[in-house]
Image (tube, rainbow, N blue to C red; front, side, top):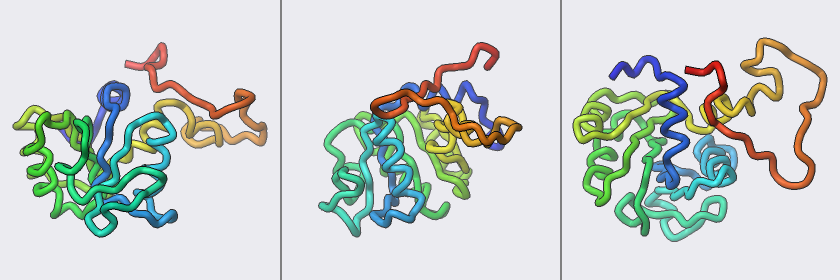
Length: 178
């Protein structure tokens, strides 16, 4: 697979089918990108499992932290890697040892390891590299465009939101999306 480009349909298909996400390298520090991803995906309804051996037994955004993937007490649909690229092959090997195996290996922004991708794809897993599921979800749901980003228009008008409760958006394909 060409990992320099992913179609919206490929990303949307992943985000619409996964329910549980293990975030390897999750941080309890509220200013770290991995914390934002744990929070965001949890708020969007995914079952998020932070993985960080240094914080195992604690919580990140109300979610229990595990030392390794094998410690998660339920099947994992997607492994999101927040570690340096050189650690990706070992994380993929750990994911492949799970039963059942996850269906997706996702490497965060700035993380690309073609060896890890080839290993995962050879085992039948989908792979995304150098992307963030939080950003992709926001982009596909048009949530990002609320503030003028990705809409080619900046406006001083406030977006119309639902009253009462949390705004939930869909990442279903747009009518003209292929």
